[in-house]
Image 1: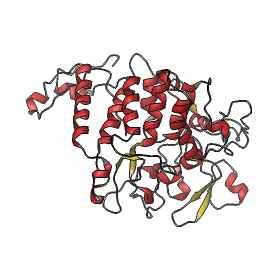
Image 2: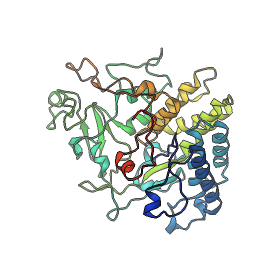
Image 3: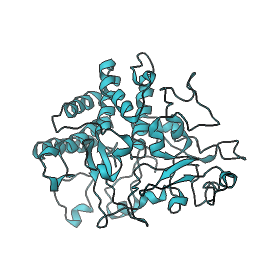
Image 4: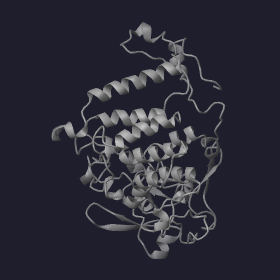
Length: 396
């Protein structure tokens, strides 16, 4: 869902190639590739309509703001903060159409609110002509999920603030490790399914999701505990995903919910990050970026909403970005550009406190990231066999 600019040379062409040309083309300098991409985006932004200029029948098509958001990301992924700030400021000021935060974070991802004023670009689906089913691999088995293929980790869960705006490890946060899901950032419950979660279906009926081992039997429920151990058919982390699941989807594995790839909240977050990195973050910038995002999320405590002044704003903004945009496909690219991937991908990841008779956090696999190699992917050998001019990236 995101664009991550190459960090090394790739083939570049601006016309159709013959098979012979395609099999011999060499890699172009990175600077040339980036300049071409940005030139194309700037040009197309002068041609495309704004969203307001489209007819009802054409809503959802690519707009000026789509091109400019992508352009902002090309600068974001190179930490070119002045350009990020200037482009985002133009979008905020309505130069490319009028955008705003949708009033409800939960409602933003529901089918009845598609094409709202926060959406800059989404992938369009509709029952029954074009549907998707991948998220059925992320929801609880007891409500229709398939074999679980992906689930949130404890490290993401721990990054959600308390309602008073404090991190769970801060003094005075009120965090209770034995009752960890209460008084948390409201976005947490709209994004992640946890033990005891109230799963509401499209018809208004609901069911309790029992994940902790022994909990279903203790409650006298007919369903089984969701967590059965790492590597089983159900969640390996003790969590599931709720965000972007279509509650109106019919029985089966087909959903018609549009999947948002660009939205206005990301513009505000990019702008806040750029201004902070430029040393220009202040109360006014905070009040037009982070504060409205938190207000929309459901925070009301002044300690969560007011400008934190001399606090570690970089950590605050990065955490806000992680929680606001969770499960939207941007996290990997963020930790790459921050360089934090060298730490967070070189550690053992965790799940909920369901191991050793619910006394220890689940330990998952140890991930490894080689900073000398892994910022780049390998060029597939099958492609290099066809084209001898495709050199390999370092370390492979």
